[in-house]
Amino acid sequence: MDLLFRVVIFVPVLFLVAVVVVAQQHSTAQETVKAASKRAARWLVWTAALLLAMTLLELLFIGF
Amino acid sequence: MADSNRTDPAKGNGLPAFIMGFVPGLLQWHLGQKQQAVTAFASCTAVLFLGWVVVGERLFYWGLGVPDGQSSFDNFAHLGLPVLPEVLNLPAQVAGALMAYDGSATGLRMQRLPRELEHIAGWVTAASGMLAAFWAAAGHWSLRLRRDGDGAAAAPVANPALCAGLSWLVPGLGHAKVGQKDKGALMGAAVVAVFALGLVFSSGHAVDRAQYGVWWIGQNLFGGGSLFAALVTGPMRSVETPIDLDLGIVLCTVAGLMNLVVMCDAYTIAERSVFPVPASGATNEEAVG
Image 1 (cartoon, rainbow over the protein chains, first blue to last red):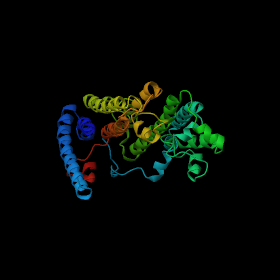
Image 2: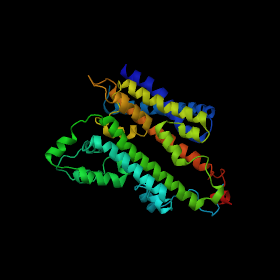
Image 3: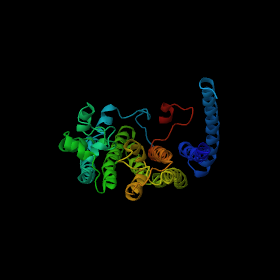
Image 4: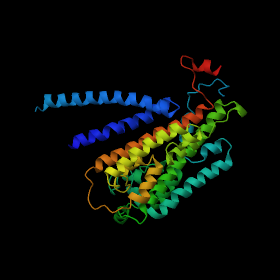
């Protein structure tokens, strides 16, 4: 439950971080939001991949 | 537009200029801006000692490590070097530390003793370091203008260092100053939202220099947020440790680091009003020519 709560917090914060990061390449808020949505989605995929890899490593070295 | 003397716009001002930036006003003095140099030195020194009057030896306790009277770390502490961001205002910080440091058992005890109004005074001493950084940025900007600028034609929409300083206090205000109001509001809202989330999850205890000094260095990159915490949430009595305190501390620090990006972006936008980025595919030489 605690992990789920933190994941729920993680997603909007990831988007807000993406807003600040991609804003450097844009000059209007509209362009920034559009680009930040794409960037945040890409980061989410990477996060999922990282979580999966860590879970697999855990299963491999520690077991169920 | 600028770059008339064909210097590579990406080239920095060099190591000597970087080192000179640690002494408020030295860059301005070097550039012949004597009045600004005196103002920079006096303002940074006055702000530091204004806070120091209240916090005293306590400042040494807020460094990257705690002096214990035995380790070699104490030599750095004696000079006030591990205390960030005050060390950016190097001469006043070192002079104050040399005068105030007491490595005896009584002195070390005094460092651990909380003071009245230490939250706000700690913010003020830190503000002196940030102020020194912005004066250094202003000096570097003047150096850049002198090196690459085109005389009267080289005038930015706003002083880049001022834009960065405004963004430190209110994220996005620097962007408003250079004309990108909606983008500034969006970036500012993002920083404030993450900082506010951090404060909510930690029941207001995430931003506390006395408790979490190293995290506070990052959190203080959002000066308006750390000021709010110093005035409102910092002095609040802590009854029990909030369950999500760790999450709150991380979020507030992330917000500070996000604001570092906002400050750099505000500086860059003002800078590019004079030194535009070469079109993609074009070399610097082509852009200059």
